[in-house]
Length: 233
Image 1: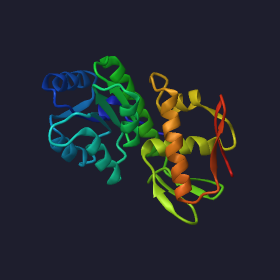
Image 2: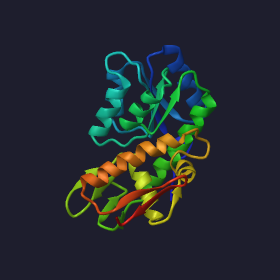
Image 3: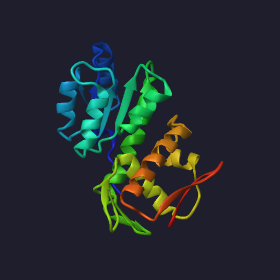
Image 4: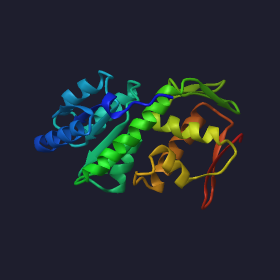
């Protein structure tokens, strides 16, 4: 399985604070990434829609078009590019809004650049794994296409976000086994990430709704105090 190295990764930074954007671009280039910068939401969205980026670092508060709108637009159009949200807000509701809109990770300002680099590396590794793992997985009455991110059953189908696809793939590969929140966090967000249990809870909720949408008999059961298990219902 071939995973992109830093030299092959192109990152888009959408940030209206000029000095911060320039600093991030400099740091990324110093670490052998190719980095482009957009200082407003309109330009950022146009750049993101090009589909050439491996990771997008996206500020929420932007002129012209805000970061959440950009994120929702990308996901609605089927773009699964990993997105790290930057925000000055640290309330749980803002984190959940970002995750609910399709973000893969987030950082509250001010943040440590080493942490940002670690999260970019983690997202880059997972991006490579998903892109290279062409094929489908089946369990009970559902089929997951890990290349197109489509979940289907005999009755309906729906597109998943990259993170939802990764989570369902992990549960399907460990079907009818209990997967702890810690195991899921390490697999989906990376060992270096500071993702918390509520990240997992949010995405489990998303997947349950999508399983219901396709009228699947498969279900994700909570094992109190331990984690989750995918069963045939």
